[in-house]
Image (cartoon, rainbow, N blue to C red):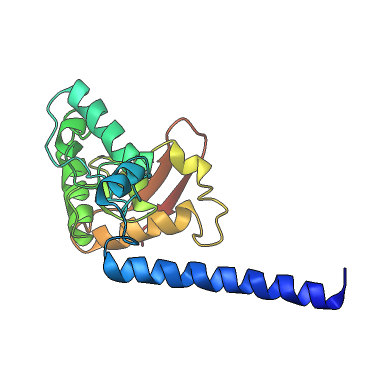
Length: 205
């Protein structure tokens, strides 16, 4: 094809495109709604568009005190699903009184537990930070000996070799220091982990 012929064809095509654009602009000017979205068609098209999920709202923790074993289990499940560690699920102490009904038989152990919790400004161990939330029960005798039983999960947390916590000895010493001023007769604190041979005693001078 000759160069002149190509030039003619190119000019014709450019002219056709310009005429088309001019025509669209003319129609748009005469009919403002020509290039606008059809609201009905737009809503139909958007009907299948996925909804963007908003911020995740944290699940609420149980706040109603439990009085039965069924309520205890239900509250525990609810707290774990909300993200609490199983060993520290009872942050709001809704089950503490119910669970302790048969665990602190002696007045000495009850007094020691009350003093210790008060020193943390807490109503139950689960309201205290790790590793204190592992505490289950205090048992004491009139001879000045206190035994602190920790939950089985304490063994899996490696309290005897954790680099950020020097083990049962430090835990026992901390409890002893918090009790010493109000329980001068206390002479020894023993830490035990349920279902584990791990235990350690600290003498109080």
